[in-house]
Amino acid sequence: MTFEQENEQLLQDILENSFYAGFKDESKKRYESSCLEMNITASCNQKCEYCYLTKYGASLYPAAIRKEDDILKNMELLIDYFLENQMHPGYLDLFSGEIWGTPFGNRVFDKIMDGIRRGWGIRYIMIASNMSFLMDKKRFENVERYIAAFKESGCRLVFSASVDGLFLDETQRSFREKKKNNDRTPDFYDKLFSWCKEKHYAFHPMVAAHGIEHWIENYKWWQHMFAKYHLNPFEYGMYLEVRNDEWTIEKIDHYLNFVNFMMDYDFRELCGGEMDNFVRESIEHSISDKGYFPYVVLNTGNTYNCTVNTALTVRMGDLAIGPCHRTHYEPFVYGKYRVKNGKIDGIDANNVQLANLILNGAHDKTMMQCEKCPVSHICMRGCLGAQYESSGEILKPCPTVCQLQKARIIFLYLKYTSMGVFDFIERSNDIQKRNYIDYFKECALNLKEGEPNLWNYWEIKTNQKIY
Image 1: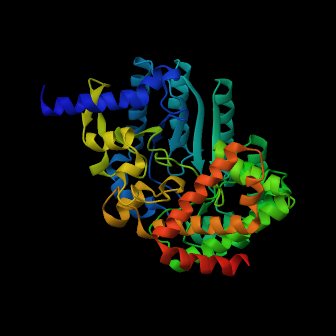
Image 2: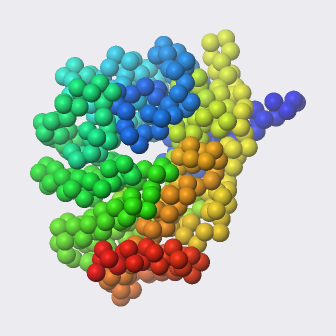
Image 3: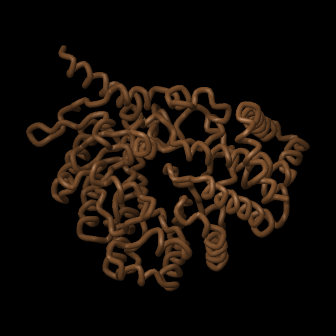
């Protein structure tokens, strides 16, 4: 056996253990959320300020492999390969620039629908979308038609609204065709919320360094819209930080102002000033892993806190397998499905070592600086793609993101202490919650001991906000 053949076999074995076995037999899934992610195209109708595709799309997904016919052909080949090998992911994630409701997007849906009708076990499809199809009557009708068609086939098609909000969308998420920005009227937002309520689709605005100073007003707007449409803010909103290496001290300070406002607002307005209600959303929320917003207390353990462990990500332009859609840079591609005589007949290996490290390793043992960090297990952690874009090292955390995460933990320790949340939990009979909080406090105080200057700086900043 040649060296290349050994690498191919090793990659095949890694993918078998990490994904294929669970796709063939659901009881063998390594993670309950394991899925197939099809990375369709990087071409998009928006040019968001913080989006990596805007800056690095030519390297992540070269224009030469974005040909629609080739993408559709490769989708067909991959679905055939899965069917032939009796692999049924159950959960399919479609990652793409905004194509939904367009002729190309319709053809993407047709390929998947054909696979389902031939027995491919897909019960749930998730798409993050900027929802601009709501601005176009024909595109909207197309999307509605496919939602109904998938439902009839036993599959739920779900859109997650990647919309930042009234105070940020135009400046931070501009359309490439500038005049389209004028279409984001109050009527558009009303249609968006009404439709998402009807379909039970949630929202995931991104909290980026860009525009962070506007997030308090933006958050008020979100709460106004949730109240207007009688939506549970804890169920329908998720506010994930963009972990680009752009978080200056000033930006982090604005971020903590926002989190402080958010906590006070939620405690007073959403939880009625009742501590047990607030604990249920902030602490129990964390334990049951329902989602993320900036003041949840995390216990991430030693795994990556993203999809690199749970999603088999395939770039459809060339059938390249990578850690995730943001790390499909050529050095980090695990390998590519090999096509021969009109069908997939194996994998050409590329970076098997990285595949083994990410899929079989522990995050805190493989990331530079994380192994000995006292808060690594309660940290949201960085983004592998952003880390590469910042330093050229995929496993080296961005310095400003590290500062953001540590500042957040310091702030939460002081804020929860000030609010009496920790005391409230300590007086309870809930051993799980008490252990959970004790571990968070232990990690935070180890950070205080190890980096006293950092702690003192953010303690002074925090005290100015909470007292």
